[in-house]
Length: 176
Image (cartoon, rainbow, N blue to C red; front, side, top):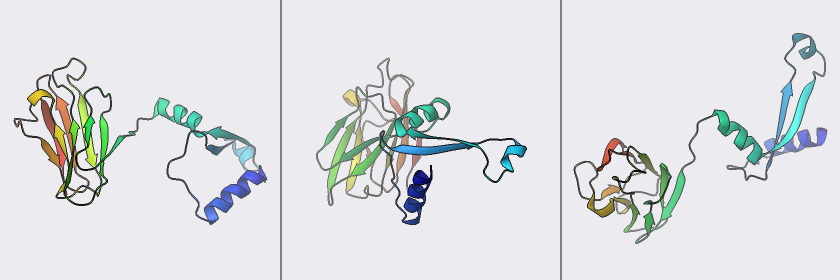
């Protein structure tokens, strides 16, 4: 195991980190024996293994609730259709500089599949002023009491929509 430990220490020393591991990357996992008698030994017993990221991810997902959003990267004139999507957390990013709008089409709020459904949108720092995303309702449905498209046009803006079976209702909105 000294080769793996040397590799890990070398990566830490050189500050080599990856932000999102691929499914084929490996992690080194070690579990020490929990008894006091064995823990006080100069070299305590440890059960060490290499595990692939995909195996670790499936293990962690069983007991942990965390969110991996769908990324939408758009520029002026782009249209993204969520009408058949199961995604409920959407991360919006703008890839164009200047006056540019892209649209995100919301699912049908009256559909059985989307009744009582929550969809959350979060923007990054690229959303500002004239660079924005518009949430467009299906067939003229309403967001709250408005038939207008909802604009996300601020840094790190967030909005959570809920379908009551007839329209989308804003249940949370945050902007800087």
